[in-house]
Image (cartoon, rainbow, N blue to C red; front, side, top):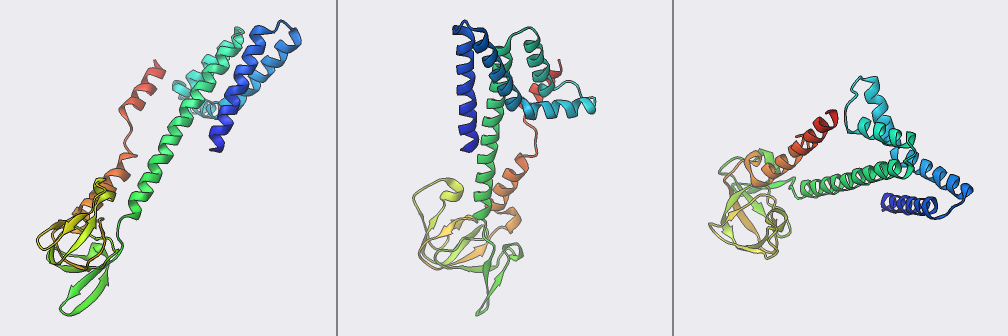
Length: 234
């Protein structure tokens, strides 16, 4: 919110400076507006300057950051102050929106990780032993109490309850679970006690696969990002 407020303020000042530059025929006002534009340019482009400078040191001359730097400096050189600042400011706005999307994605990943259960009540004869979901084997029977998350995929062998699946499927209406009902790991048992037989190891369960896919997705470079970098080089 602070960054959005700051960026909005900078854009507002930019338009005021441009209005002064265009509509007031006064040298002092003109120099003041140019000074404001230069300050906005330096503030909005400081991160781009750093990246461009580091790229130059590495002799990696051609990417979008260096392109923006050269384009805006050239615009200043020919007196196109408004255009130079506008290009840098709009590029910065795009970077801000991209960062905002990444932050929301990270928050979603964090929420997803929180739905993964960290304990399972394994039934062995007449005893109940608390184990890690990773230690469950196919054919094991575990107990799920009301309000607990289901550690791995399985099938109900005893009991009846309502299961909240919206964390995985988005379905807001609870699903009724009874004997022979298939259950997904990561879902929430709402009201009854269930005995569930393991049908998949934790690493092969629905929740484990979803978490793995989401975590690994961020390490793969998007095709559009690759295209933009190549285009900037040209």
